[in-house]
Image (cartoon, rainbow, N blue to C red; front, side, top):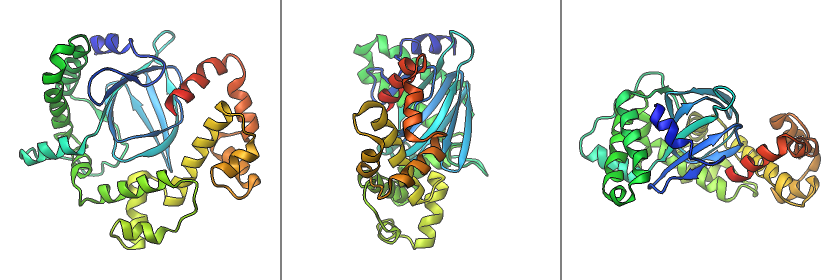
Length: 297
């Protein structure tokens, strides 16, 4: 872990490309609100608290968690101590690679009661594989051959752990997870538009009742809440980095009422839009937080 942390200290104050396929690293002091894409996330130092729909999850150093579908989240990072920023690495999930492991008769274990966004301790074998992966940043001539092998090993360890059942469902095109993933992608592409749930249920090959149930089990939100969270995260970015006023932003992201937008924004972020933006622009918060929010978006 100590060597892993020293390697990841090279990261910027945002998710940073490592030069390795699907692998990113981060060194941060605050948590930017963002849409998390499907990934395996390993915490190396500090703690992270994420609010995803109705769930609030905490992730400590030495643990990993899975994001099985695109989810909008808000949260906070807790540094280990002064001069010890939050450090983490992530592997974007490739369903084809996972499916290849399953074809090779790797059995996904899973554990009773484990749900999406639960954190579990990373076994020593997974940490060892991650260390060999990150060392490849300094060995680009070896990465093309070794990185895909180590990626499979990391996913193999995850399939053998408590989250293995969830990871298996990511790879199965006929799973409820894959069906909900198609729905979340549609909402992301049309988040400014009003929509009815019935066509999404049909798209997912489910009844409306089953669609609601599975959508919330995967995202911790209803479809309407999911759309609303996407809109509000986008609104916060526009407030900080665009010249539009709050009313214009409300209509730009799909709201028909500026007052409703202001109420829902304050409910999520704790302050009305203009006051929230002013908080991030006030030193010393502005220099650090604005950079993180912009990078995450």
